[in-house]
Every structure is written in structure tokens, then in C-alpha cells.
Amino acid sequence: MCVLLLLLLLCVLCGGLVNQEIELKMKLDIAQEEALHYWCTTQNKSETVHLTDMYFDGTRTDSYRVGQSFRVRVRDHTRFFITKKYGSGWIRDEIEREVSGAYAMSLPYVMIARIEKWREAFRVGALEIVFDDVLTLGLRFVEVEVLKGTIADALAFLDVHGIPRSTIVMNSTLDMAMKKNAL
Image (cartoon, rainbow, N blue to C red):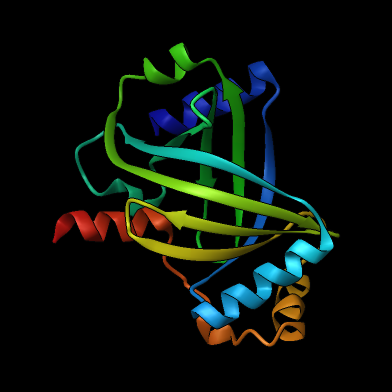
């Protein structure tokens, strides 16, 4: 609850917004991923960034499962963002705010996971197509995020590109990292 209050206060005082995030994460086979990547390169330039996601929790429990954790994202070792997501599945509410590195690293919470990844993102119309190489898990994922529209737009994108809905991964990267660390 303290994390929630901290983030809400931060957002009110500093201008952070609550956004609705609509996103599908998929685990594609190599041929599907290469075909989609090639198509994306014909549509727009990409941006590649290194991301370090550190997940924090105010307790030493598995409260991340009930939405009590928050993330500090470090982008290319220079920009820091605090993010809190509410809900699960394809559509979630999200509060995100850029902060100073000193502030982000001084928060008095317990780090429960650290996830390193390289991300290549393409903006294609009202969608962002993201190719994530998650170093921490040794896995690659493709995400389709709706920047403007509905979940139907993301599902239609999959259908147009012949991507089976069975490739959609329902677990978050944090869930996967926590399960890996529990082994």
C-alpha cells in the first residue's frame, strides 16, 4: 500500500499520468520472428535500447503476485523511470514517471528481481512492435503494443501476419524471472 501511495503522490506532484496499456507478448518460432522482423524493417526504422528492469517490493513476500511491486527501469544506463502497473492480462493501467537516477536508486524497498534485456522497437501506425532479447531468462519475445486503439487492433495484426493466438504468453517477464529464481 505504501508503494501505491508513493507512486500516486509522485504522479500528482510531478505530472505522471495513468495510461491504459494494451499489449500482447508472444513467443514465436524463429521463422515467424524473422518474417515479422523483416516486415517491420520495411515499414519503419527501429530504435534499439538496453533496458535494466529492477522490481522492488516493500515486504519480503511474494506480493508482486497481487500487484504490490513496482519497477525502476534504466534505459541505456542514463534515464530512470518508475512504473506501477495494475491488473494483469492484455489490458492494464500503468503509471510511469521519469525520475533522477539518485532518487530511483535511493528508494527504501527490497529488490525482488533484476531483468536485463535488449529491445528493438518499430512504430508501425498505431502499434509498436517490440523484439525483446531477455538476457536474464535467455529468451526472446515479440510484443505488440497498441498505442492508439483497442485489443482488437492487436489481435487483427496477429491475424494479418498469420501469427497463431496460441503463441501469446500470459505470464509477465517478472513472473517468469521469479519462477526461475525459485528453482
